[in-house]
Length: 139
Image (cartoon, rainbow, N blue to C red; front, side, top):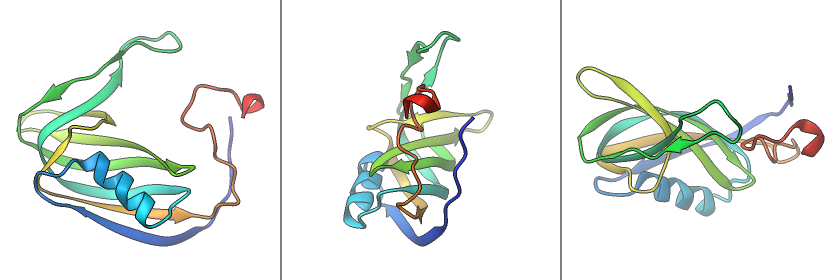
């Protein structure tokens, strides 16, 4: 187990316009606002195309699947981190019957819009490597 204490700084609001790639837009916002470390606080919208990946096995590293669809979907939430300037975002979708999601990939396009809030956290906290399967002694 690893834990760190940090403080929240500014909050950056991002709006992805219809037809734009959501992951590319988040990366652009992180670069433009010079965010080193942050948290995806909330987000919602809709998508015309979805692309994400999910784990498919219990071994490490796990096998993965990369579903893609052109089905219109509601976006129920965004969550994850900005770690050392890199976006690690998960997304939750729903249709009229099911909810599902995973790690956001390029190719997920906004239908109406996607609105996301990123909370910047102070750079002094060491969170490098939190998106890997390395143990603390390796970090």
